Image 1 (cartoon, one colour):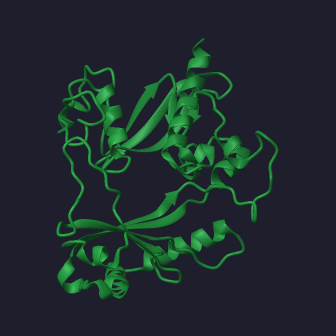
Image 2 (cartoon, rainbow, N blue to C red; image 1 turned 90 degrees about the vertical axis):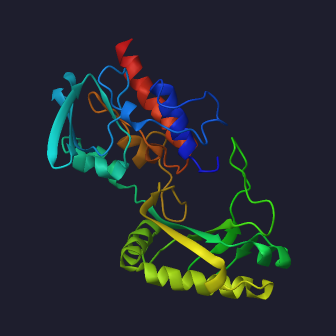
Length: 301
């Protein structure tokens, strides 16, 4: 999609909340206007409540004989609680031990093993891409630099959205930075990288981006002061799910890996998110959501 994976969420919301947006195809959702007032209507079978941060989930009764769940969330300055027959925690798995302190210690350790990969995705809007056309490139690899490279945005046209076809048109350049630091294993390196990311100013990013683009594209006539129109730096101190690395992680028996221990149902509290599959992508998040829902359905049958 032109907006990455955001339209997948938009498609899901449109299917769950009838009347929230026009259309019924993946093409017409791209530019569809959503009526946010319909997200949390009282009589709707599905209610989506924005600006509401879940902070605690607990089984009512006991974990072995649960009578439902209670979830506490904060909206504004007020803590509120809702009750249900079951819930799915589809947040960062490493946070769940803090949200659900009643979990067994072994399960907490499994959930905490996931150390998110810090990421920086930067988008730079340029006046035109004549310099890239002159150099006959669409991607630059830059080993040793803060940003591992530069690439033109995916040429996606869909549902009335059109990508830039002529070198004289504006376009977006994507630049990626993966901050890491010293450590005995990848998880320690990622924690150190997260600290570096918190300490890096936007000014540092901007100067680095301008210098990088000027040196990489200068021979094609690119001038940063003239040709850069906007910069967006998306910092994800807790970015992608941790994926096991044979250099650092043991080969656990089936069912004994930290993510498999961590995602076990706890009473009527179930766990999803791509973290629960130790794989950082949308398809895994969907698979883990399906698994968690299936656990609840299996209990009912």
